[in-house]
Amino acid sequence: MIWYPWLDQDYRRLVALLMKKKRCLSVLLYSNLGVGSELLVRALVRWIMCEKRRDIATCNQCENCKMVSSDIHPDFYKIDVLKKENSIKVEDIRKISEIVQNYTIYNSKRVVWIKEIRLLTKEARYCLIKILEDFSEKNTYFFLECHQILPYLSSLNSKCLHFSLKEPSDETVMKWINENHSFPEINVRIATRSHSGSPLKALNLLKKKNWDSRESFYFKFTKNIIHGNDLVGFLRELRKEDVFEKISLLMILLLDSIKYRKNAVFNCINQDKLDLIRYINKVVSTRTLLSMVESLEKFVRNLNVVSFTNLDLQIIIQTCNLRSCFI
Image: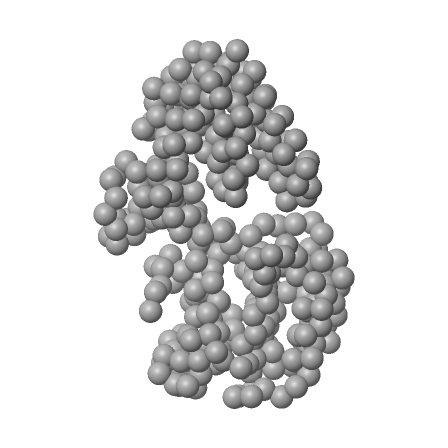
């Protein structure tokens, strides 16, 4: 069974909370993307459902444990956004109300897991609040998951116990990667620092396909933006599905350039791109670098709300802004 060592402490703390409370809990989990929160929730569900648990340990042998591990337990309900959708609708939440009013199938407990509550529509959010109020004393546990603190979730926050998953240190992540995989040490360090606090995202970057994509992107940035050979080609590069990752790579490079200028070369993440960082420092001022980073941050914030047409326009604007800095 897969498990990540940095989840141990959070698992113990959450089980202690579950043991302490006499009634079922609604838990709002905050965590970084790529920290492994899904494994933690499943472990907690096994503990809740296990017929032969001992203290914080589950037997992993009883019927309930096996069904949870196989994702077929009839009293374990998951609500996740579909790939073709970008929201969790009120109809999805109303199904929960129907579920919690019925008797459990295998034992006296049930668990509802909503994987990304930021995607709840306004109507779905109000519906969920009502459910949490009406069924707070029922035999139902709620695990709600979110990767960022959002003001519009304040009314929902008040109905839940808050719990923030601990971010593993870069040293812990590098040790874990090196013990389980064989990647060059410099690559491991770059990936870990690029996705600090998100070990699974760091590991994903180290995969050959993604690492080669990183190399290709920086090459195309040098060729098409710094030297201005093919702006249209760079536009196509940003228009791909992994636009978030591409913008992140750009921001890391620009911030590295600022660090280099401040004589903090050892704090630069891209230790394999120091020649490129030196060149950027020669031709772009600190003020311009900061302005570029600020513009890219604003672009990222708008990515989830702009229409398809406006997204293309924003990418064109960002590309032209980047090119203008090197003319």
